[in-house]
Image (cartoon, rainbow, N blue to C red; front, side, top):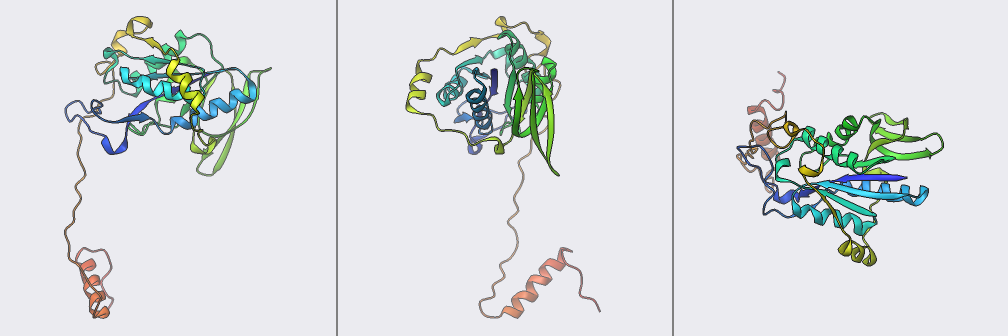
Length: 270
């Protein structure tokens, strides 16, 4: 099997900053990591390779420093990696990002399966994986918790999707794309040999000029969705301290009165 895993480098949660004018994340100067939910996709792909043979290729779209994320995936066991990087892709929304990634995947030749993470922790939309499938016109199953079987003779796979009521079994015709949840597997830790391999690996670089793309679909200008306003939630700490150290009864009465002032508890019936 030839498996492709799209991954993303994201800012650590504690260092996320937004540009109030463009509505995009300010990535410069912030510490970045592999999107934690993509690690489960990498692990799922590696286990499928171990069961069915083949190769696992990782692809990421981002600034030049995202090469670190690609090498981390190789250290985990992926066979090779590609970085799609060009300033003309900057500011892309999920629609534009999935388009560029689909063109990059198409340029790599055929594939049997694309395994993506459930969502990215910075955008939290869960749209890029299904978007790639739409652009490539292949079947998609989201929130996959288990890969039940793969039948290469008839080019199909059966998976279980995690839904509100439990699990839903779905059969897909290959090639296909799945997005996976944490239940799929526990990500492995890179070995010393894997880190050595990643350090020496040649990461393929693709720019706008290497891909057959529609220029009007690229970057911030080519993105049909926009963040129109950003607001930081205000945390209100106003109130008063009610202590029950000496008189529990009066403290309870004061607390109930405080709640009734704000219509949070009903008035005492007469």
